[in-house]
Image (cartoon, rainbow, N blue to C red; front, side):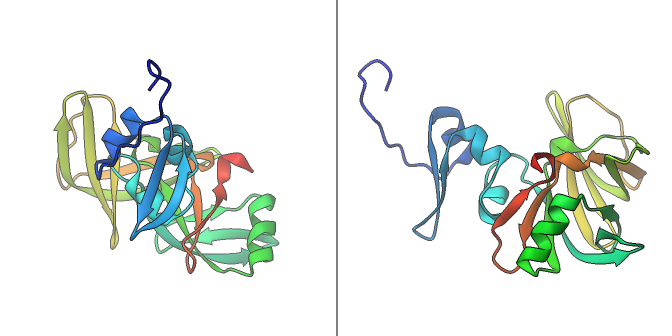
Length: 190
């Protein structure tokens, strides 16, 4: 408390409340500390899949990927997209000897356009549900068997069953080790 100079420990299961009130937030799962940090650190650099899925509303979207080598380059390949990897991630993955990873993308990192630039990836899907929440719209999109939530801060009129192409900057992608579920980094920080 800034007025009294005392440390206050507040326990809550509401992540939004913890993020709003805390200077430092401890995320626990089954009695084990997962991560301790400022609200910004937890949001921007989650330590593992649990923290990434718990912190943020709506929660982070996840894509299971494998690594594919093609033409001297390496790509992340899922059932519906292919993303060329920067050398720093390739080196990290080779050191880990890991071929299966999980990508995390925050709902607010999607853009409602197909952006054909090397620093962006895009996916095509079908809208299956739209939520208007005040000044935010949540668009629920199905891409093959995967489902994503896209958050836009504008009132946009999109209909259910509409085809939609969305893009996201590669620097916004979080990378997680599939077996250990620990964070391997954020493409924007390599």
